[in-house]
Image (cartoon, rainbow, N blue to C red; front, side, top):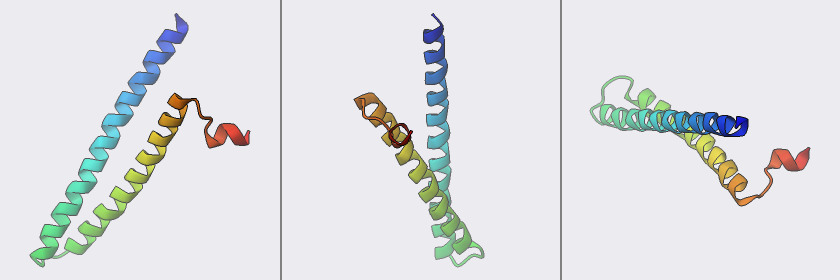
Length: 86
């Protein structure tokens, strides 16, 4: 019974993390689009907003890809790099 409770808490955490990552990726993508539009119209700070969106999207995407690789490896029974090194 305890393992079922822990599993439910784990899946709830994964669902919340998925929602958070989707929101962060959406916000960074919107920053790219808004920055590009502002840059095309030659308003101030368009370049800053555009590059800030590019970098945040890169960081969040890298984290998301790494997280998804771990989930796929765990579901296939492949040990992660942390498990192999210890």
